[in-house]
Every structure is written in structure tokens, then in C-alpha cells.
Length: 92
Image 1 (cartoon, rainbow, N blue to C red):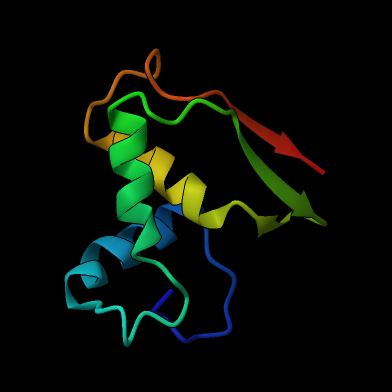
Image 2: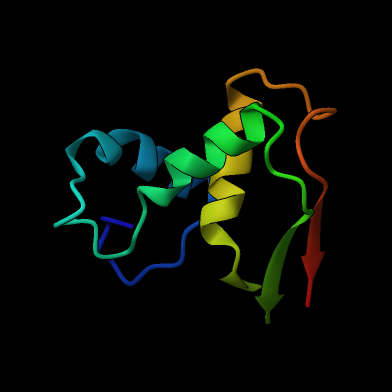
């Protein structure tokens, strides 16, 4: 994400960072490929995301699935029914 601090973030904080910064992203300055969150959101909202979402963590830190998790939470925040969203799993 755009926030360059070395502090660990919660998903809530990451969603807020994304919300405050994504309009300024361009493909050239999006070094973390955060813009893919927008296509993930559209796929989830329109039932095009068919597979479950896996969030992988180790020692309490997410190591894979951050962008998918942010997209999922943004859908929930936008009022999308969990019934049409993909299943989400945490795995260690």
C-alpha cells in the first residue's frame, strides 16, 4: 500500500489507506499493484469470482491474500450481501 511506514496494519487500516489513496494511483506509480483491488471488487460484486478466498497467515501476520481481503471488506462495507460473495478462509 501507499503507506510506507514499517508498522503492521490491520485490515481496517489497510481499507482506509486504500480508500484515501486509490484515486491518485496510476499504473506507473502503483508499485504494489493495489489497483487490482478494483477489479477484484467488481468481480465479487457481480458474482464473477467463483473460487473461495484464502487468507494465509503466519505468526499472526497475513502473508498472502491482503488485496483479496481488502476487496472483500470493501464489498461488505458497500452493502453487498455476503450470500453473493465468495467464501473466505483463513489458513496458517
